[in-house]
Image 1 (cartoon, rainbow, N blue to C red):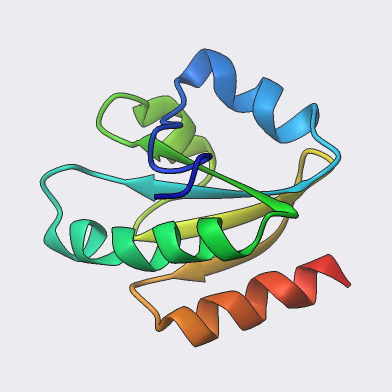
Image 2: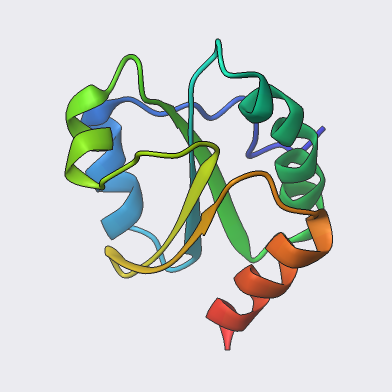
Length: 110
């Protein structure tokens, strides 16, 4: 299992520190524990976190962090937001294949 995911569930207090204080690309998985597509999508993210060591993967539970979810307009899940230097640079909405997600993340690394 990837060392930086799934253990790293972040809180609202940690969220802004994580996305702004990293020299890596940050992929934040916005999820809800009760949402079956989110649960089914976790293995895709775990696999990518294991493969892509140059990217930091974290997750945030929207139930516990509704203010952040609202601020980032999370209306469909799963939702991955890719941050670089504290700014959103891409968004992946819905459960996608590992190939699609990896390609979108790699484009952000360029």
